[in-house]
Length: 404
Image (tube, rainbow, N blue to C red):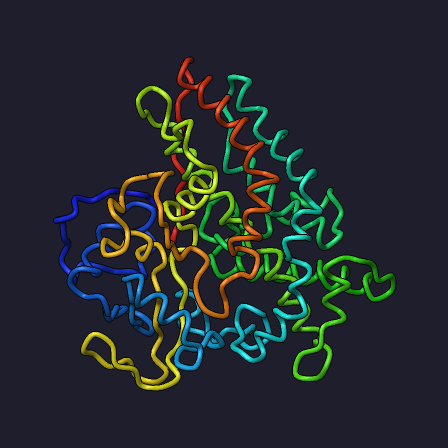
């Protein structure tokens, strides 16, 4: 998605906004559309020429409410606009598509695998990976940061699931084919055909891995999934497969998007030393990078009951989209929301959602562990690389783009 900084007074016509149009994010100005909605229509009904319409909330307070109140807004009937016109086959089975108390059963049994101690055990490996990943930036050639860092979450996930290193490139390709089927780099015909084909191949892959884990259980995430019990019974095969899929896809795009968008800003001028002041704390840089990039634009929920909001009624069964990227530019919460400021404090962004679905590994103590093991190394290497860029003919070749 294009990251823009519209004039705070600028508006567009409400009847010209189409939040379901992917070109708005790749070629248009989504931030201007959201700015208009926050000011003029904080609960906005988005009609569609073909298919079901949906409500949109764009202020941080409302986004937090929709994502937090699982008794009112359910995750089990689809969590993204792409799922509007067909039921979510993973609803109620995949951890991210369940509501409490079932969701809490999943989280409780998986918590140890994503704890701060688990992250710390990978610290040296992550440092080594970051060193190798950033090193080419010092060589003077073209360095594709998005492609380079796409491997990080997949490589970490592969280690956690005990997947062979030689499978990583194939899994990255399948993951992007599933998540971005309209991208010509991954297309196998129509978007639907591309996504279905990728999902099928991923499922076949994990069927084999699950069969191997049943024969030879080990101390890895797939073997651990086989021990889970929800509603007093072990997970069925289809539940195991969709949760393997979820774990694989979880951060493969968002990590690269955050890093890419941040590098674009860090490469810009600021008193001759870039946008990362030497005295800026690492914690602040990471939080501002997350707020700035907002790698997940939205989550969707469905109303369980009629809900009154901003003088309008959301009917039971209506789809409600919570626009995280808009909430992270909310003028009522963030001073100078369109400015990248590593010293911003407080920084109450909502990148990781809210309520029961907020990832247990993000919060403050655990996230610092990641910053400690990867961030310092990343900062040292990137500071060198960006400094070399400013003192040479290096330039930004192209900016990252994503859809909704």
